[in-house]
Image (tube, rainbow, N blue to C red):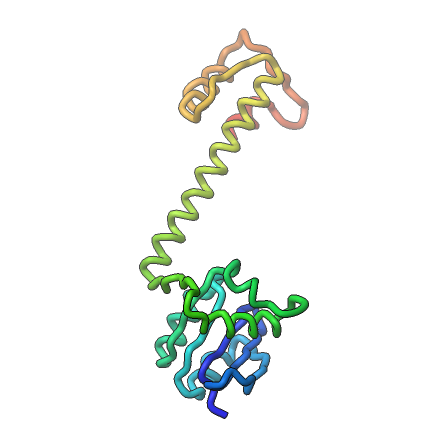
Length: 186
């Protein structure tokens, strides 16, 4: 009854684990709370562990690899064909367990902490740029509603909007509770 291969369906709080022996017979089906995952796998003999490459997968891959296990990550779309019945955590863990043993499976390299840090910074910056662009486009759209056309591009908005606000010849509405001009500055 030695577990040789394990599939883990990652979650926020409760993980589903499915394990098989060297003959492919199911010997382990279990739900494990997040706080117990490291303890459970520290007490399990070294084995092959498969996970979908999703949120927290790289963290758990590093953690389980540090406990001596061989860990492989797979893109979820490559695991999906191995789901045998209705989708739930238990069948997902079973599908992951089966998929990780396939010889033609493509695996995702496990990222180290430095790689994840750089990717997180890039993703955060990308979000800020997207929000800034959306805000710029919104300002241009609002001004267009009042007949003021500002060319596309953040540089045009940054350069021209302050001058438009200061220009006394341009009539922008002034609601009593909020200055339209003040809203453009924010």
